[in-house]
Length: 181
Length: 200
Picture (cartoon, rainbow over the protein chains, first blue to last red):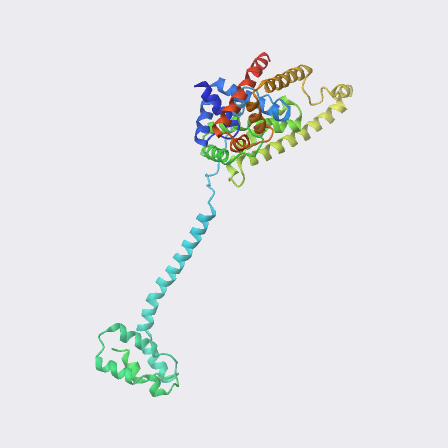
């Protein structure tokens, strides 16, 4: 058992111990002074082999730091986990899609309104000001309603505004009347 | 700790411990101190050149790191961040020590000659020097007596900073064998080292 722990210490100081085991080892080293001493000796030997400089660590080094921070009143900021680039990108795309969805949702009722509201305005304008392209809503209403009299519908199809007005941009009265169906 | 930058496993452990500290678990900071004490003391000692003062300065660096940990966002590895704090603390210490020395020069001129003596200027005492020499010799002797495979394994690790995987490739043996050889080499060295340290 001690050999197993010592081998883990050896792996730990080489950064070769899986992190769950490393966390467990650190807890055990904290509780068992002999393991702590072993770790310090291994580290000292490492330091001497690498640099011929013995780095001696007082046995109470961790204790002293621990004691000092025990008296510290530190207010840490809320833990902000680092957001990955992928998460940020996904959130940006999601926000974009949501934005488009809101725009579309807002425009759908407007289309229906334009099909309903411009009846009178168009009728007035067509006579007085000659607004172009006002025949388009007629088709939409006619298709949507489904209750239009088939004969009147075929009449409207046969007498389209452009036939009467010869592309002058003025809506025929017959087409305008179709709005009211 | 190795002479390389901490690897991914080590960084994961650091992240976990840092998060625990940021959540108020002070004992997690003990783990970080234990993990990096050797590296930081060694680093500070390169500036301060006095093992006893190096420990005090390293301790101060850890305390500063704890106070600043709330601002640590993990943009760099924890060790890189701690390393910068330790260097700044050591440099500040050197500035204040130089200031103290210049003040003492004015006050006690006679002390100047003694203070500037090379063996006392930021170095170990003769006793400590002797002990250190003894330790270095003991470790060198233990290394020489190691079987060749063990010696090669630990040399590749300590001198070349190679990972176990790299050593296994170089020595054409399984990673488990490398792990075992390095451990047994350390144990052999430790048998020589422990009695010397107990004498201190």
